[in-house]
Length: 410
Image 1 (spheres, helix red, strand yellow):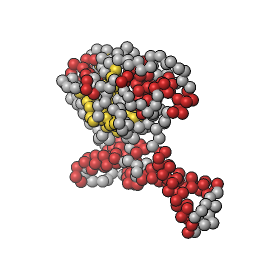
Image 2 (image 1 turned 180 degrees about the horizontal axis):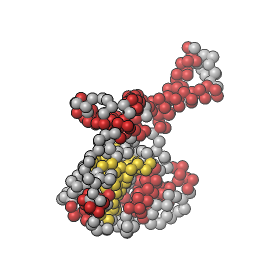
Image 3 (image 1 turned 60 degrees about the vertical axis):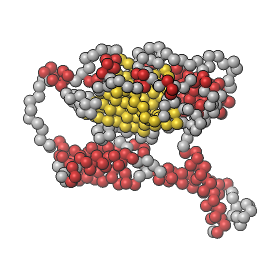
């Protein structure tokens, strides 16, 4: 019997009830705070395409095409809109309208152009829209703290906060936004990625892709997932909410964007010839971090975990070279073991997209470990990021109070 609770005995059954209610509360709160910015974007695109009411809702090819784009845009919102009532309402409505107007049949019956189709060897688009330049490619990656691997294979760690351009040339522009990771630490991480595939008059229109934490869409911002002759530029979702690939076949450009935990990363591969089409400016992939923004990992004094423990955690993921250096720095600075996977995936992207050439700039954080590190101790020290834990503790506390009041008054 707990003093002050009358005859209400807190038994194992009571604790089970508290825990069960807490789980439901945490799920409800998670749904309530769900971030559904994509719904606004999809709806804006839909309303814009209707041209202020000029195109009326009905079984016409023009409206069905707009409706299908809207429906596809909604489906691409992923996990971010699971708890949004308006999102589920609009998704149900678009399903109903597509069925009601028989849009699949309407679009198929749309009159097609009677222009003659040229043989493949005479098709000017086929002749123009493929890469004819050098086969030599360059690679750039930004991941973790962030760490940057430049086109000329230099490895650097930056403390750049805010928006920074990675690439800007005649065909491609990429930028990222960095935010601080831990109060009091110079470390930061990517919170947003923007990729612009610029228009090439004979092959493809301009398309823009935007990603942010917890929002990795499978389409461009206009709701399409491909454009150009034969879908020559395309967004491919390999792992929903975690891994997206953007390609421009006619330019031999490949961009990987990933989310691991609460961290975004980006890897870019493109022909070296495209470097000559760039404009002058401070771009991280070509120039690296500004000198004033570079971090010397060996002189960093803000550690939340001993480097030996971070090293043990990173080695278990088989990361090597600069990726091991990056992993040890990130884990020791943040005490977040999720960075072990960030480094491993960054190394995998490098192996897949680059020529595996030597990267310059090793920091040799741990050239020699004087003492053997006990792995169990190392792992017990490393935290795995989990935004649900504080919410769960809060819900357990609130549920306990509710249960106590129930026992007193009922």
